[in-house]
Image 1 (cartoon, rainbow, N blue to C red):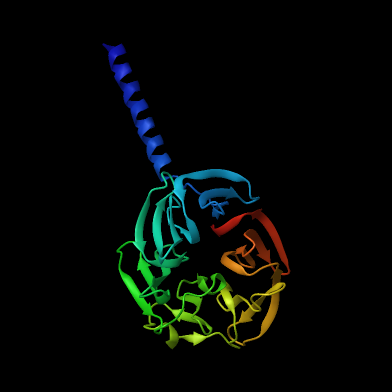
Image 2 (image 1 turned 30 degrees about the vertical axis):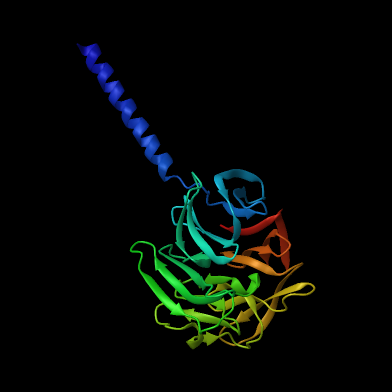
Length: 288
C-alpha cells in the first residue's frame, strides 16, 4: 500500500517536472540575447554568435530578404522580402518552424525599444513603379495601427534610403523620405513631410540613433569610402563617426556608441567611433 502511494507520488513529481521543462523550453528565446539573427545571401535565416560563428539555421525559410526585426519573445521575427513584379511583403516568421504569416506589403520592420510596437513602411505598386505610402506603427498587443502618410509619389529608393530606426525613448522614428532625413513623432504626426528635418539637411541615409540627441547618418553615399557622421540634433554640429568600405543597407543600435551594420558588400560589421570590425560575410540583413 505504502509502496503504491510512493510510486504514484514519484510519478506525479516526474510529470510535473516534465511539464515544467516543456514550459521552460517553449518560453526560451530562440535567438539568445548575445546573438544575432541574420539573412544570408542564400536567403536562409541564421543565428550567429557575437564572433560570427553559426549557432543554428532556421528551417524551411528562404527568401530575398530586405530587412528583419526580432519579436519581443525572440521566438519569431518580422521579415520583409523582395517579391518579383510585386510589392515587397512583410511576414512574421516562426524561428522554430520557419512558417510565415503575411502581415503587410511593407519593408524595414523595426521593433520599438519598449518592445510594444513595430514600425515599418508600406509599399504600393499601382502600375509598374513601387512607392512608399506610409510609416506604420503597429501595437503588438492590440494590433491597432497608426498610419503616418508619405506625400504622394515617394519612390521606393535604394537600400540605404530604406533604413528606419527608433529613438532610444521610443517616441520617434528616423527615416529618409526621398528628399531629406526626418525625425517623426510617432504619437502626434499625421504625415511624414510635416516632421522636422535633421539640422543641415543634405543627402543623409541610413539614420540610426546613438542616444536621444545624436543621430548617425551615411553622409556621402555611394562612391568611395563611406563616411558615417554623428549629427547633434540640438546644435546641428556634425562630427566623423566611422568609415566603411561600402554603403550601409541595414543598421541598428546595439548599445551607446556601438552599431551593427550590413553593407552593400554583404558584410556584417560592428561599428564604434573610428572603428569598424567585420563579423561575418555574405550577409544581407541582420538584427540583434
